Image 1 (cartoon, rainbow, N blue to C red):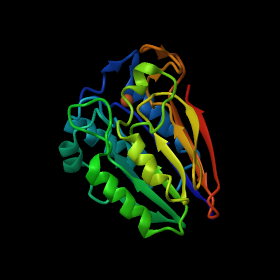
Image 2 (cartoon, rainbow, N blue to C red):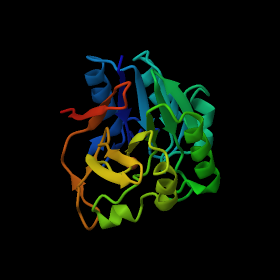
Image 3 (cartoon, protein in one colour):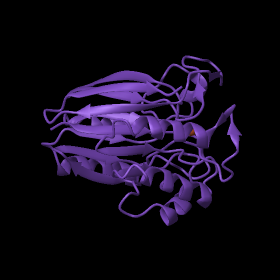
Image 4 (cartoon, rainbow, N blue to C red):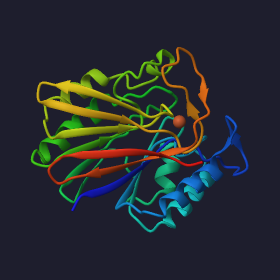
Length: 251
Ligand SMILES: [Fe+2]
């Protein structure tokens, strides 16, 4: 049986549910995404960071309540807008994904924290890189998906690429040595992108997913918003390592 995953990213819930960011009420747009999802529930959800706008506990509580209504497993990764301590207090330990390795339906999911408190850009750092390598060594036979908040390759927007993963070279030095790594999913960029990375061991698909609220314009030299609707990504992971994926927009 293939594993069906939905990636939700850059939800940016605010403590005040009436707050609007870049012209979008983040609560309402997330609700619309969730009701769209209910028509065809996946096996599990990956929420890849910027779960909240300010890292406030009321935002995490509301997020948890909303996602719980779907009654499917969910893993919560942090983004640069999140507060690791507040997250760890509110999100149940079995759903918290701050460097977590999960085996499900013959796939290995490696869920990383790329957050450096106080910085917008991401960095894994030596401890997480070591942890990543150990996680990959543990299940060499399982096709592997890596998820993290910050994109691991440039996306063609100079302002945004400066705010990506600062130690992506080290990331690729490790991932490029393990042929089971099939796909890397990220958020942060509030846009849909797919970039292929060719390594000595094969090809890795790097997927970036729209936000459930406001979007950024792709291939823009400076910060610019895009008027595309909120979105999310479905992934079908086959037992033989094949991945099919589609981004959905919710009007
Ligand atoms: Fe974001």
